[in-house]
Amino acid sequence: MREETIKEQAHRLLDSLPDSATWENLIYRIYVRQAIEAGLKDSNEGHTVDVKEVRKGFGLTP
Image (cartoon, rainbow, N blue to C red; front, side):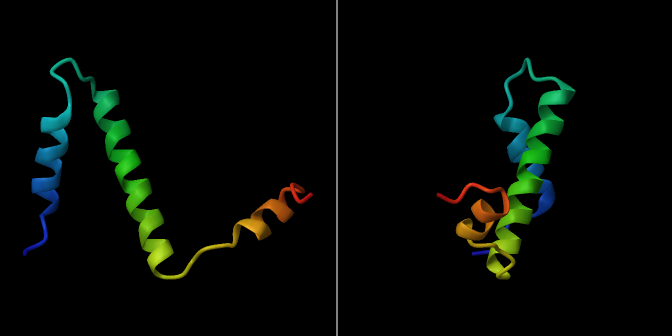
């Protein structure tokens, strides 16, 4: 199975928006998608921090 191209992904994203969508709606969807993809890439590459360390850094440990 071949990977979907960016152009195909963009068409699918546009098609999923309602006819009343604004440029702001489109930009938001693109931003969210990029953020999710970046997070998945970081996770797959092992660039994560244990939740206990994060909680400790914010002073949220019991």
